[in-house]
Image (tube, one colour):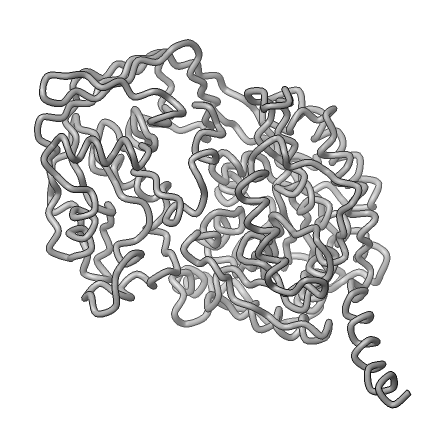
Length: 551
């Protein structure tokens, strides 16, 4: 009896912890995901029939929750003008070295997209230049380009930061945060920098540790791409951008008399100089189909009772990868159940919980973004065309991929050391008898890969909950079980037909995480305080510039 009595407090604590999701109901989360990830929605691709069904569903549900429209002109939606690019038909892509042409097969050796509204890409024998990590960072005294002329050439990049693979004692070690990726690590930055320098195109050597995902994720788009409509696309975008497998890159470097690994070491030095791949020429010839598409963000709000011009935003993205090539079972819809129907379900549950209680002092905004999978385009468009002032948005709280394997003893923090919202998260987690664990895989640059980033780079303090940052310490199975789920999902289901709703999910852990953001949002919405970025964050100066607009 004494042993049983001693064990009872721990048992009760575990039971309370397992159920501590407040007003957030795991069953309702599951029901919403089941609907959004059903075959009827066809993978929720922007500009597809699946989008039409998704927008109709979301607007109906937002209205049923009792929200107010917060899109454009009193509507639930905000039009997002996109250009959709596709590569129909065959592609001829090759690398000529020493007089011999080596075909590069799409999806097998190379993945390319085109984001200029042209009818055809025709590149003949363009020189290739290896530019290391392609980083220009004056604040770190770093410049990989050294004035190299890239006009008419293909820039070849390494993925991640110059210190990602640095060994202890190397001068570069820690310069870019070590394993914690900076924005310089992102493929988006590398393409942007190549375009700024007038390159014809850019290829990034794919390596899964630095990219944060495998080759299957790279080729998931099958050449399809989206961009916002631009006044001068030739100025902002490359004619060709893409990825090269490591195997193809090793061969290309070797035929140019270079060792890829040795060049990677050289690129970890400030003294690195761009290297022309001697005797190598890149050619590509393929048709491009481009059409303008009007996609939509869905936005609702609850107007604040005392300070309606101040706001707190909850958001997630409604889009997934739509229909693709058949898998081994013949299935074509990439349903995006956890990426990110579960996040949208969280937004809805938070809205329902707030609607059931007293109206907070600040306005609450609930957003479901389009085209996240195409480069954060829906949230980026909102960042340029906000429907509520960003200077007086106290916080953006984003959900993207919540785990379905049960309650946890902790919550994983993406982007540790960025904002004061992290302190609120820790306090809210403590009230759930949970702790905060920093992202176990900062090299994946998850902080720069979700929609909150579109608002962060405009100064809004943000916090992201994402289940891919490392396995949570599950009540059943511990951290090993959490890591096993992350590994399995990332390898087998991420952006694939496998990402479907399942009846055997245990969404109590997801509900716990959603409840954390609900509690944080409630505290912030009923406060006069303004969360800020931490002094070391690159986003703090952006927020400080608008300080006069906050009382």
